[in-house]
Amino acid sequence: MTKNIQAVIKQFIIEGTFEEAIIFGDGLINTTYKVKTKEADKPNYLLQVVNHHIFKNVPELTKNIKRVTDHLRAKLEQIPGSDIKRQVLTPIDTVDGKGYVKDAEGNYWRVFLFIENARSYNKLSNAKQAYVGGKAFGQFQSRLADLPGEPLYPVLPDFHNTEMRILNFIERVKQNPVGRLKEVQAEVDFLMARSEEYKKVVQMGREGILPERIVHQDTKFNNVLLDENDEILCVIDLDTVMPGFVCYDIGDAIRNGANTGLEDDPNLENVSMDIDLFEGFIKGFLEETKSVLTPAEVDTLAFGAKLLTYEQAVRFLDDYIDGDNYYKVNAPDHNLVRTRAQIKLLQSMEEQFEQMEAIVKQYAS
Image (cartoon, rainbow, N blue to C red; front, side):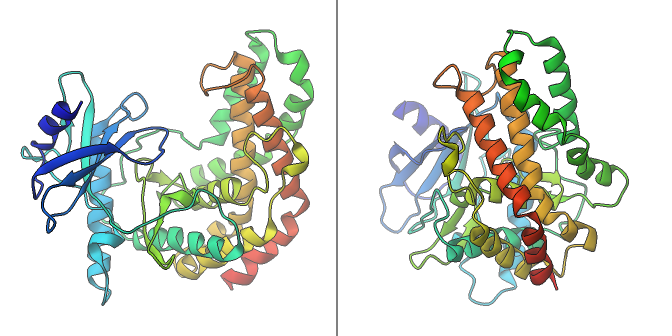
């Protein structure tokens, strides 16, 4: 593997001499290495094997990331005191100018400048962290609001098309391919009773009420890099950055970050939405974006938390009814446990929804 990595690295325009490559991070999609160089005055690098089974058009994905990071870099150059090599990802070009390498086995490789002395956290633990996360993703959103040119390439078409997810779910329920429907009828009924409500964001986009923006679409707190003082450096993991609606980023952040339990928590008493974490995130996000967002977009922010939680419950239950063909499972009922945890989280949001909307209104004013 080291020889293969050395052969790949030679095709990128890097400074310094390759010393070693070690597995880095705990990402579930791409395989990542930290590449160390021998010289103390030369940078280290982040090398990744892109999962081309998920991201099927790596050339367009590469162009997306280049456009986004170039634009963010140009914004930072206008801000005095910016540490540009640490405050935005820096893709490293290849000798042939493509920005990626495809090896003999069909694997796609890419390289970024390694951001030194940075850290991230897997889970929000207090309102201050939530505020920092909201501010980071808000900066990302507002700085990309004026990206020129055509829309970014949709690397995962219909990624958060809840209307489509619901229609697929209805068909799966009708087919009942592995005979599991009877045991989950209560969960199916719960989700179907809300189906029309959760189609509305896609419908509002289709009607031109909501503008499509560049959204991150994977707004977990561990995708925010912080410095030694826990101040914001940059947002990372840009593979899913593409056109979408701003409430998707709020929804994904709150679903992942403000849950008092686990995504697959078997003890539903653990699961609820922490309203203080919701408020912290909204405060930080709207500080950066309220001058950019339209009133219609602001009106969808609290709803976005419910939307993404509902959508994920539908996806987990769809996969369970289908026989667990999409998500990795560690037990026969894993997807059902996940579904029930998402439903419990959604119920908690429904109970607090008026307060959630009031918080958005407060910080948007």
